[in-house]
Image 1 (cartoon, rainbow, N blue to C red):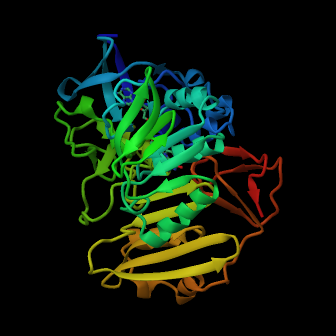
Image 2: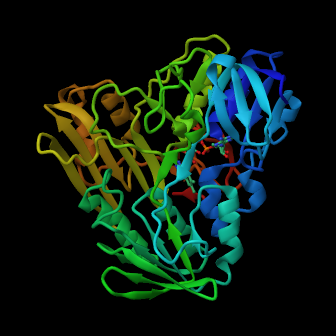
Image 3: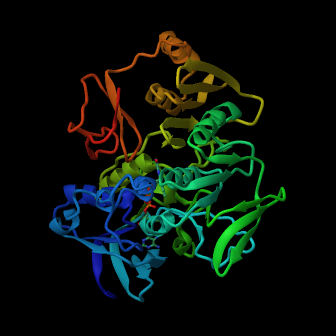
Length: 462
Ligand SMILES: Cc1cc2nc3c(=O)[nH]c(=O)nc-3n(C[C@H](O)[C@H](O)[C@H](O)COP(=O)(O)OP(=O)(O)OC[C@H]3O[C@@H](n4cnc5c(N)ncnc54)[C@H](O)[C@@H]3O)c2cc1C
């Protein structure tokens, strides 16, 4: 490949890289495009991995229904190839197989790498796992039928996804939190309690303020853990997930400005001409408030940033204006949206909160104010107000700018206006609301991430 040139080179075939490739091809019909991925699979819906492990989604359904898009649109896809160095002033990227490729424009979208604390005893055994890639998920799925008990540790979303996947797959699960609540940078104790209750109702044994002292192995297989509180917990699998960290070691020795991630402006440009970054690996140059939590679970953001980067790589001037710091997900059947500073630790913030008692459904809502300005919000169980609050935070609105009726509806118990029916997008987990009655067999498109959903088995919630 030395000496070869691609007009557009994209490192990473996750959602950011794929949307960029599609966008570029839509705008430039003849430029050469190369997408490189260290994984050996075509593009797949990463947030569906827990459902795959749990046996709720077949492997084929993880893949895009436009599988041949690259082929049909003359886009070169290099699978199982890892970028190991970027040489910005030669416009060249070097790969682990010794080859290199020159580029006209480069997009860095390598996503994140799983962070896992290392515990004594666990080194080198296949019974210690994490779930970031399809290969990870397939490995866990291959073991699931032989597991009686699994233990998962970590306060990140990825840990709870693993808990849910194993539990729904029929394994008895102990979930260890090192602190006293879930996702402490996003959730307060009340919000966490709703999710903990849901986990417990599903049969998960949740232990708080605990940690692993040692992973116990016999004949090469895990058979339990000893904890710091001197308990022995029997298990054949230990899942460790402490969040995602931008996977950018191969960029570090270049002239590209990086911190935790690759620094970009709103146009997804790095400090180096012709080089862009998007998705979990990209990080906005701080616009001020360093109390904003770092969140690396953001499918929709990667999707949108890929489109913006793609447009700008062909010479446009699009910008990514959404709120930088948000998370939207679903744990079991509980939706959760965290926006901006949702769990401040300093005393200068004022908290508006309300609790809605509804039979069989826990709901928790909160707005965080800094001198009357809306700087954060948290919605658990019912996330109907998320887009309005996201817009208010992004535009730095005051609480007095917000319609009183909206606030009353948000915090007023029992007056939730429900649409006729809704369905949760299996990929980005958005609640898609509909005024008409949705039923099995209906085909709908997710307005956020764009996938087509063929409604099946109990997807519709009335
Ligand atoms: C199990 C799981 C469940 C999730 N659920 C949700 C959810 O419910 N909601 C939500 O919003 N988000 C969720 N996420 C997060 C979401 O998947 C990510 O935010 C999103 O995939 C980021 O997209 P990306 O394109 O930036 O990176 P990625 O999807 O991580 O893709 C990056 C690609 O780049 C490749 N790559 C990395 N380094 C190199 C290199 N050096 N050379 C070549 N290729 C390289 C990788 O192999 C990978 O294919 C989940 C993530 C996981 C792991």
